[in-house]
Image (cartoon, rainbow, N blue to C red; front, side, top):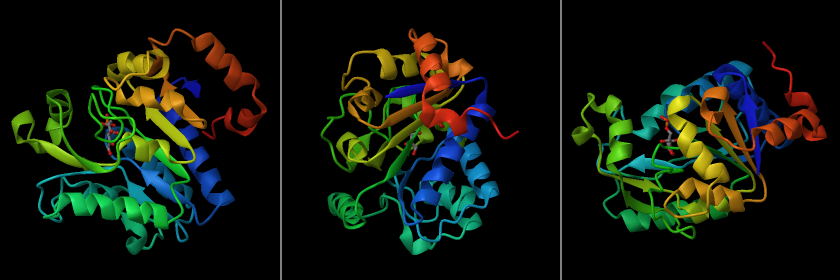
Amino acid sequence: MEAIIRPDVDHAVDLVVKLIVSRIKEKPSATLGLATGRTMERVYARLVASGVSFAGCRTFNLDEYIGLPQGDPNSYRSYMNTHLFNHVDIDLANTHIPDGAATDLKLAARDFEAKIVASGGIDLQLLGIGEAGHIGFNEPLSSFMSRTRDKALTPTTRAQNAEMFGGDPDKAPKRALTMGVGTILDARELILLATGPAKASIVAKAVEGPITSMVSASAIQMHPNCKVVVDEDAAQELQGRDYYDFVFANEPEWENFRQPEH
Ligand code: F6R
């Protein structure tokens, strides 16, 4: 794993966008794993502005709420269409989001996993992190071998996402269909982006804490090709930051990524 600390949210987002664009240019038929949430809104805005072509790409989103009607503006399908898919040249038929409105959720979950396998697996999985330590909606105690399945959301997550449901955590969905931790770890590359002071404590636990299912994001420590990109605010509690800064400043891999474009 590498932890990369950028001076502010703009530089952190810039780096992530540059990485995604370079991966798509290297492999125009890339299979991308995508995330939703407030952190990713800036990433998608800049990806759209970059003009990179998604024409050959397939995408799989991490998760979807259970119980929202098709087309609900708070669904992650609506989020993705609004923030990315409607503004780029991707074929919507190649965009996959777990079907949280399915009557048979187990079947929908199996079907989603089968589609990932049929696409050749995920090349690059983008991740955010929740204050409860989730990646996707893998809440505490999610098995590190878990696959796509339905999961009850923690009160912390429902409070974190209440804003979209009139500010009332009780109105936020109670469950979601989410890729498992095992599904995420199968991706060939992981990029986790976290910004803002509210993420500082959980980022330190995920990156430097013990590997534990109490913090699903700590599973990324086991992934052989994982980058965690944070801004200064989210980096505040990292103990090893001097070394992480040294690696970013010296590894040849990062040569083209150190200077922001703006
Ligand atoms: C969303 C997802 C979640 C979010 C996380 C952070 O698809 O998988 O894990 O990435 O809850 O959300 P924000 O960015 O809103 O803080």
